[in-house]
Amino acid sequence: QDMKLSDKQIIHSERVIVIGINEIFDGLQTKIDFMKMDVEGGEVEILNSITDENLSSLRCLSAEFHKTYEEFDIFQDNFVRRMEGFGFRHFTLYYGDGLLRTVNFWKK
Image (cartoon, rainbow, N blue to C red):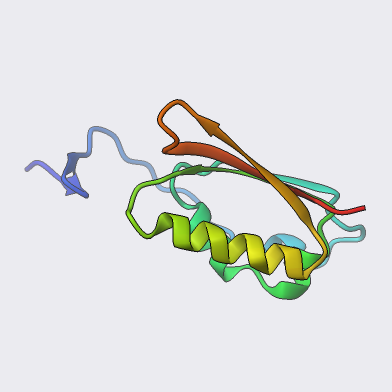
């Protein structure tokens, strides 16, 4: 039996342990200085679920995005405004046709 996910045939699968983004922050003895995200399409879900407290505690964030749906630019604009509200500056680096990009945030 062929299994499919999003119209793509699954050729290999594994069981993994999943940890929520906010769980990473729980119990830390120090703050996270720099967080790099490249989770092959899961960034939007993760960044929408991270709490304001945890997000604002970062000093730098770099996230790679693949524009996989038309409304993605709206998500990006809203997320940039959210980060600016916490005092972050940002720049976006676009690759090739602009569907792949890295958004970088930092604050002093």
